[in-house]
Length: 213
Length: 251
Image (cartoon, rainbow over all chains, first blue to last red; front, side, top):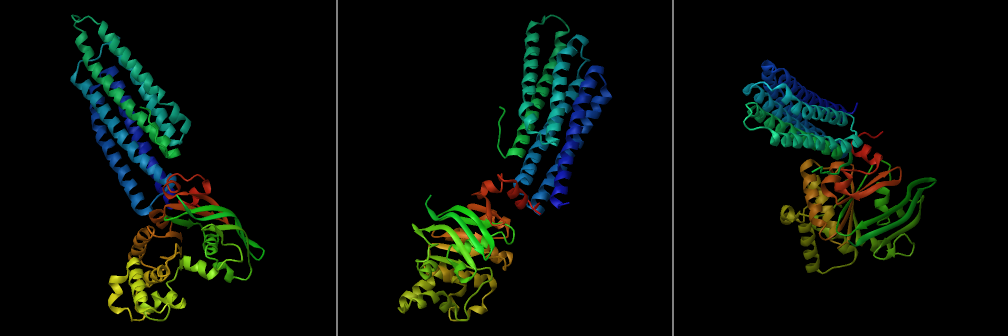
């Protein structure tokens, strides 16, 4: 096997491993939110450190490939895209950590309020999962199609805000909606970073920068 | 941008074997064009067509046009000696003549029977300066050129080519026999020289082509597979064969 093939497949594996960790953090965050599992929330915060280390590992391998193997063409594009994807994944880890902190700091989410955030979170998890599949398979068509899911997330969040306008201010449960707003914002940003990954998959395949806005 | 050469439907045969197949190419003036490709792909053969060096090989037969300054240099009638003063060449191995540094540089002028000492001195200094060698040899111009290092000898050969005031300098793997420092000096020199000359370089180092050339042509089995801006060819090559070659997955 050509040495660069081996190095690049290890590089991609590093990124996929990192993305599975980030996915699990968000999946656990939704679980912890639903069950008010504080131990699970704590473990999410701990996982963030691993994600940070993953990013370092990706960058270190990228530097080694650049310094020792001087990649060009598609080899170079994988490295450039990979470094950027690792940065996006690291930020997504931070958002999972933020959501875990909301869980630890606040009262459990009420059942009737849970539905407001759960739908958004499910779309996001699906978006991230499909995006990382697209990365693994260098699936250009998927990379172009998937950012539509981010629009879906934005729409669901907009609906959440509309619903907030309708609540009774003197209802004692209203105050418990505030952390939900914070969590929704974190999911929204994580969605934006997932969209960035789709742009990088397109760059990796075509060498063209594509901006989904 | 104006072209130095326009090559149309060029075919070249060594006896029965076709070494260049239907080459069509424009080479821009005051740019560095690199020819890359595996051994035996025809890149040096094409380079040698540009100053009719292949004439020296008896079995060579050529078809097609090579237009240089509105003239088809592939026709019999042209003055080959004059063509070679306008299209100079530097080879893989430095080949100074067994004479002094000074005599090496002005060798071409001596052949043209120029005897004016002032002219010769001036051309010698200007050429050595342009070849970034003057400061290293100005105090020993009468020393034998064989005493210079490999890198200096190669720059001397470039100075000797420049002394004839060519329009084009052809370079056939000019740094393959040099160490990295001497290579870096030649590469830096090429960047300077392209302000005044069109440079066409054959190189086995893809990274050298990427570093120094404006355009790159990738050859394979006598054909030009892809030619374009170097920055594009090494970033997003269009042809799978180019991609495989430059990423080292060929064969």
